[in-house]
View 1 (cartoon, rainbow, N blue to C red):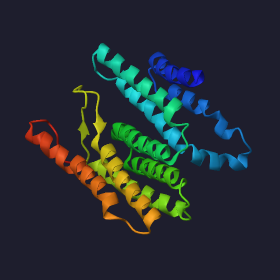
View 2: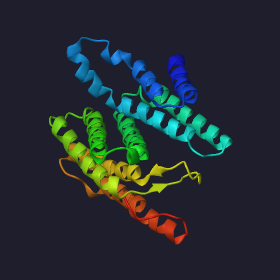
View 3: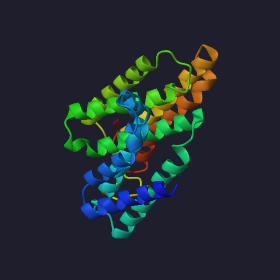
View 4: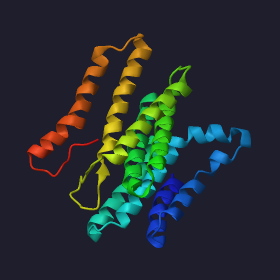
Length: 251
């Protein structure tokens, strides 16, 4: 527990001391040394099993760095940095170690949202091809993470399909995306595509879970998730525009 808390605090201090994300990324990767502390033939399996944790950890570094270099007021910046650090500690101590299916689905959801949000906060500086490849990786990793909890014989195929879906959404979002400013701070934003893919992933998981348990997709199992997703993706931007907020319709 103490080492996890120390890691979260150290990441913030390294970013502040170096004013660069790369030493913090190196620190995060170094902290995952156990992944490679096995025979080389098991490295690929271990890396796949830990992809979700990698995605969340690297995303945190992106969030911390973009907050640190933002034009926010010092007090606002400090509050956000502390909040992000506490969330990372919560991930390391409470959510990541859990092994029940509900927690594993939550882990994948956090990685999906955080990974896509972090990627599109940096996508302006990346080629479209890199953005698409990383989106594919996020999709593959999160799908595999969830499907591994089921007695599924087509994990690889289904994971690749979800990865391909995210890659296509990533290409679209690279050219047509908008962002929210949840705290009203000009420099602190998150891309709407992160919320969009999280909602789509939520629906697909509910549909898969229904089919897995009942050999068909029951309407009652997916109706509320679909209505919730539609309200987030479609209705929310419209309502915000009617209320006068500066929100553009987009992915």
